[in-house]
View 1 (tube, one colour):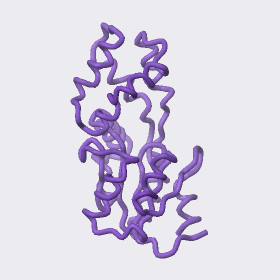
View 2: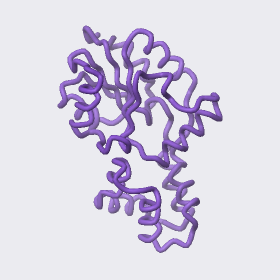
View 3: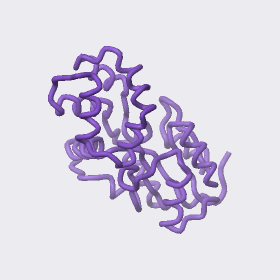
View 4: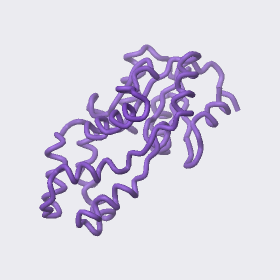
Length: 209
């Protein structure tokens, strides 16, 4: 069912625009000698290490050294960074083409929970694949959690995007592949929809717009 009067679209990045494979990062850390990384990941998450990194509250060196010290690893930080980046895959061309199309008809924005290490890596991938240095051409404005010191699903990050760009939440649609983030957007008064696994964001938008 179409949502009336949507003038603005806020896009998530990972799993919506760029393909992700979190299992590749788990495998990468296992190859470094962290055999129980999935369980340890959950424990580290409870210490807010990942949240702090995504909010830009700790440096890359602090983040990777925390993991290195946790497991008494002798590997160089570069190897940890490589494993951390392994989850980032490709930008399918049809998605970038769709972003261009929606930018012509709507005000479009990007809102991603990410960190400086991943930003550098997916910009490198984008440049290698398409000769583009960043994603700015596809959006009116790009928001990375680590550069605004907030992250989804916190209501404040949605309110920041709305306020800075004078957007009416009733006219704004947010799409994300994580239900928690969709619910966060709804709490901020936006329309929001989930992009399911193996579903293209364009399929979702065609049903709603």
